[in-house]
Image 1: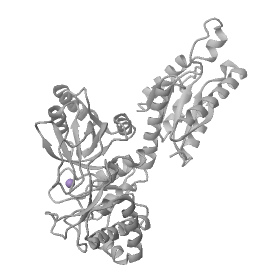
Image 2 (image 1 turned 90 degrees about the vertical axis):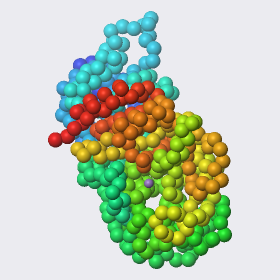
Image 3 (image 1 turned 120 degrees about the vertical axis):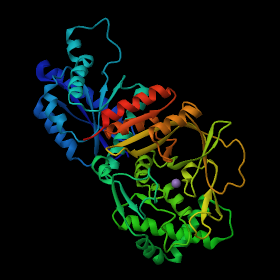
Image 4 (image 1 turned 180 degrees about the vertical axis):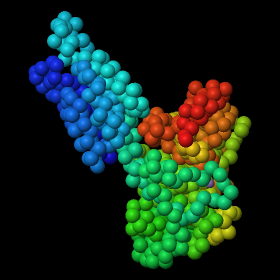
Length: 485
Ligand code: MN
């Protein structure tokens, strides 16, 4: 991510003379360089804009630079904002307006009018903010001193979001099945997400994958088995069953790379002609390497999972499914048929082989483990409302299993809902949230809200402040605001 660049654009004007403009440029460079050190991406001072033509020139450069993922703007002095209209109107990347100031304290004893003219971010940032509001741009605004650690952490968070937006534009999902018959929530308008998020979702008959599986060599399988032995405990003596999964993994990975860089995968337990196991261990290990996965044809989860994994640096992020409750203790056990990502493992995962009651195939190998604990995690669902996508973001707390579950043959996660068990469930259901989610203990709640905002998507949040009557009212308002056509 550090190769990605955020350009820092400073606003000013020629009114104050050359000396002031020289200071403005020096300060901006110093600030951008300092901020850059603390970021997951590179922040570079680009220029000080003093006229409409200069803004247009800068934004053209921002748009054309493939490495550039967004801009930070700041007004050292007053910068008459009509000069920003034309350029901002052209901007195609996320923008963060950083409301900061070169000096942290006022020089109370020395302050005079020269100082006032040179250091008037409070004044300039407001003029800039007006025109951004007038243009209806849903940009990020962050206020705080540029060396303040908490402020820098918020900027870093926004940088991850900007990187996610850029990554999203190149996400490609390979679907080895349509979505599961009769299931509603995994449906969706693929053209809508292609236009608005950049996702390209392509179907391939599973036979195309089988042709790849047939070509996997024993040597390739040996190499991946050695990798498994390093990362996982072998809890079965049915090695041939495990080798079959290794074959699937090698074939899927090769297929995705050779067919044009797919980073999302979708399969379906009911569409496996030519495979004798449901891919379990294969999909789990692929998720640990950055692939997004959606089960039962759920391409929205595969694509969103890929984006969130990128933002998370491939940590503690992946497909999850609300499975079964402990209603007495207010807990949910999340799992799936097989495919929970080892990024969620709280201890070394074990490869096991068990029968699978659904799908009519041979016993599949899978990783079994108990999930991590995390006080702050998110569960995210994207659903098609018929005229637009809605993103539902819920705060959850990942907790330790309260009891051992020796007969549970799959990996799982256990969590508590915010604001509490009942309200958390009710709000999710009122919002239409799916059973499949992407859970992350790495991407923050605020980052997901900012990502949805950057995408211009309807955003529904469930957190410690959610109250049902107010929540339903917000859903009704939101339906009017986001209704298309
Ligand atoms: Mn499922």
